[in-house]
Image (cartoon, rainbow, N blue to C red):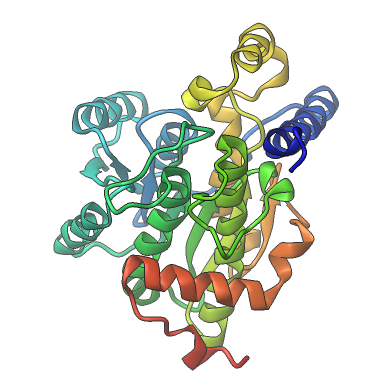
Length: 335
């Protein structure tokens, strides 16, 4: 093994981040970032995971401004109530609430879904936004590598458990929408089907990129499944860009220093980072459109490997085994 082998995942991730930042700089100086005007969303219900802070908080706040009833799913009750109070004050709406959901625990996810279903709400938009980034190696309550477990498996299970409500809510003229937040790091991610938990060789950067790649593969397979069923639900992927949030607390100290010195120029604010999620959630031109990768409010091409349908199916099947749900894909999608 080369001495550089452990560094390669980090170098690939940083390379992808640099390219993303350069793209943001070009766009900032060319046209800036602004949220398009959207029509009222009164009567619609959205769930936003990780809505306590950062991009998730900004997404929840702007959807509430549009009149949506927003449920923030998070793993800190105190911070959750604080976020709800702040959004209510800023938007002058009462239709914001918090429900506890720890994506590092399959039991907690199932309890969240149970509590949500008790409310008998419809569900028009599910935004899989929460995540952890480049953390030291550690495990979830169920024994999964935390970045793969929280970023990917937690949202995989949550989405599957909410699919029945999404299908009931969607209609021919108003499809329900599933939006999953990935990142440009998926372009350099590698999916190791023989070691999805990174037990053989753990790299914080490599594990993060793998989780973001898995989210894209999952979303595309989900869209194929929904379309084959004839469901009025669409699934898309969102790339928020490089955003100034607290996710960077575990990165290398030099990277953290550069971020602290240059964030005002190179990084998006959380409000700017939320724009594509909001666009994907409510834009009328995306009605009935699924299986897309969106960045800067535009549909772009994701990495070549994400279109590998065989890999999509393999990941889906393995994920079903991991979280303990039946795999119904093969009954609907012909191989």
